[in-house]
Length: 228
Image 1 (cartoon, rainbow, N blue to C red):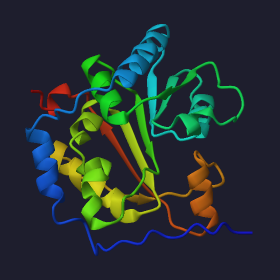
Image 2: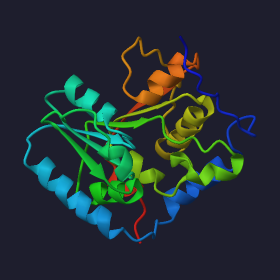
Image 3: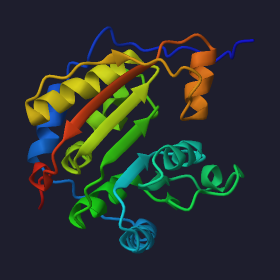
Image 4: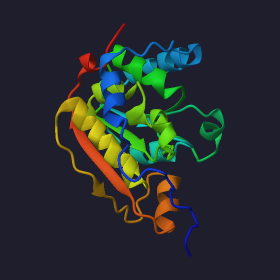
C-alpha cells in the first residue's frame, strides 16, 4: 500500500533568479523584526533546561508534532535535544512521553534562532526536516534560504542537515550556503530505509517520491548575522 502525497508543483524551472540578491541582502542588512514576548519567555525556559545539562545540543527546527525530536533524543542519548515549532496544536498532540533528554518548545523560529545566537548557543547538530517549501516563485522570501534570518541559521554552527522532498529547495539552500560561507556543497539523494524521522518523511517515501538531503559542517560564526 502506498501513500498518496502529491508531488510539489512549482512555476520555477531552476533556482530562483533573485536568490543571490536576497542572500546578499540578508548578509549585509540587519533583521529588525522585534522578538515576540512569547518566544522570549519560551527561550528563557529552554535556556534554563539546557544549562542544567552538561550535554551537546541538538536543535530540531520546525519539529511539528515532535516525533523527530523523540527519535533524535533516542538516537543520541548523550545529547540534549530541543524541538521548536510555532504551532501549539501540533506540539500538544499525544505521541507518548518525551525522553528525559528532550524538550519541546513553542516559539517563532525567526526569533528563537536569533536569541540562541545571542546567548552563545553552539549546537552540535541542527536539523531542518521537510520545511514548508513555498513552491511559488513569488514566495522565495518565505523559504529559509530566502528569508532575512538565513545568516543566523548558519551562524549557529554545528552539523546542519536539511531534508526535503523538493530537490530544488535543497539545491537553492546549498547555493545560498555556498554564497555565505564560500564552500562548495553537494546535494544528495536520501534513502530512509524505513528509519523515518518525521511523519512527512514516511508519507513522501510511501508515495514514491524522491527525498533529498544537504549536510554541512559549519563553524560557530556569530559575525555572519549583521546587527543593527
